[in-house]
Length: 279
Image 1: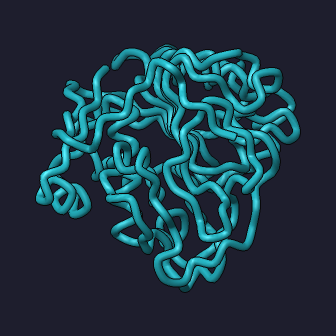
Image 2 (image 1 turned 60 degrees about the vertical axis):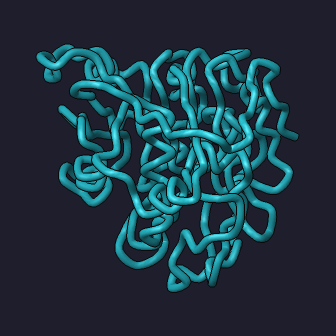
Image 3 (image 1 turned 180 degrees about the horizontal axis):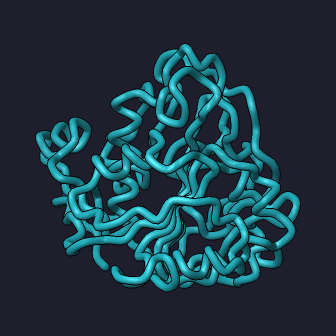
């Protein structure tokens, strides 16, 4: 059950989206895809201020290559430390288990996960939420329902949207309907009630602090589940509307900047709604 942090006050959807201002940002992308794969290319094009993408399999937080990518040392010397970590969708979630990835929970920089297979607590993974990852929510039609809190993060009005292509058939990897998010805020759900996306403010508690290794997160955490089972790889099953929501959510959680208003955001602002994000 979600617990709203006492320090969070929700405006009545009445103001502008303040886009994060930042110069060049170093992104650390962890998955098992090859350099130049679809997700890496999408990140490069989706944001206006990406300086470098350090792309590799960084499941083991303590590994020397992971620490070099995080700190801007060794092979990654020159542009400074990473400023946001994105854990992708094509990967072996078991590699993040047994506490291997627990160190990510101690970072003050934003950490984004694109799958509950890694974010769950099962097998000593990240522990952002309890339970396993569920398969089966249908992707036909407007399958994703955005919550009022989700509006502030994704730029989409509360309501139902077609985030995922019906050719995918059913979604693979959402947080279960009974998942405990700790202080995490549900941004969107599937028709079955499974959690599509969630957000933890800095200072929010994870769903399983014991597995997470922290009682509260020192920086923001974003879970935005995508599915790579359909055609086209990681981003093949996600519609342009879903990509807009993903882009806006990552920009909200991190210093990455969207180069121009997305279609969701244009309609959002066109109806006079305002979203303020303070850092």
